[in-house]
Image (cartoon, rainbow, N blue to C red; front, side):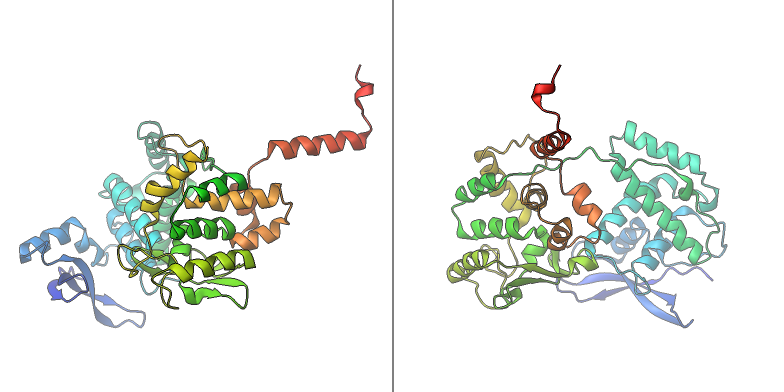
Length: 391
């Protein structure tokens, strides 16, 4: 396949006129058709040469060219081919906007700068493993982050093998560690109530109450419209999440479903709807008042300006730099339901909409010291070993 440079074209976009790079691709039935790849806003790159320079910086020339020498291609081509193939129209498993952004960051900020100029099949597993180790020891990256990096690199080679660009996967033999030192802060119902009392705004109060009672992810709760609240059915429909300023698919297939709507929670939501200036069926349940309801409120701004201060005021021990946000309410509900309310783990898994029960039990439910102590006491009592037998 001959090398193609492509051509520039200006197209209208909701954010303004943008540059796109036009090029030819081979579709699934073997025909050559035109495709485009966005470069940037015309107002940021007013001249042709500016747009070409940005296209080169993004590595678009590599991405639009097929490899003329299978097996002897550079890693940067293999990586860009993966991004095009695994995230494009032919992808078997569609990816969310957040996943695409995260993977592109790993590829372009780490993998390509390190291995981009090397022949893909000449890269040695030991070189990859030593680099990963250095990222942890000198770069300060967590092993969980490096494990994700290894997964992306392995996927690059798998897609390359599928498309017959390479014949082997050196990342397959690389070892990493996946254990995380992170332990989420979980709070008791009394602390959640104290947080609620510290939030004078009915918008913020209802947001935290709903999140605490349903364990919805921040992106999911922000995407909820009033039409998703099924009052008569006693549940809330979760079919999307708010990401990158627009609606996107749920995190997993298991996330697409419903969460319960107890009459008590329903009463609070009705009360908030009666006060909200945006109460139509198509309006966001938790809108941005500053943006006049066109978008939901910003979770990060809400957490920084309201939730964290309220939590600290309620006595939640949050150190500077320690993570605490709406997601901690999800952890807290799981922890309380399993350890205190003794709800069946399968039921809790359903509420949290986890694909695997191991996620519910291993990542979202922490060991409770009082419960383990009581359990040990029950065993000793059943054993018949009383204090009178102590020597």
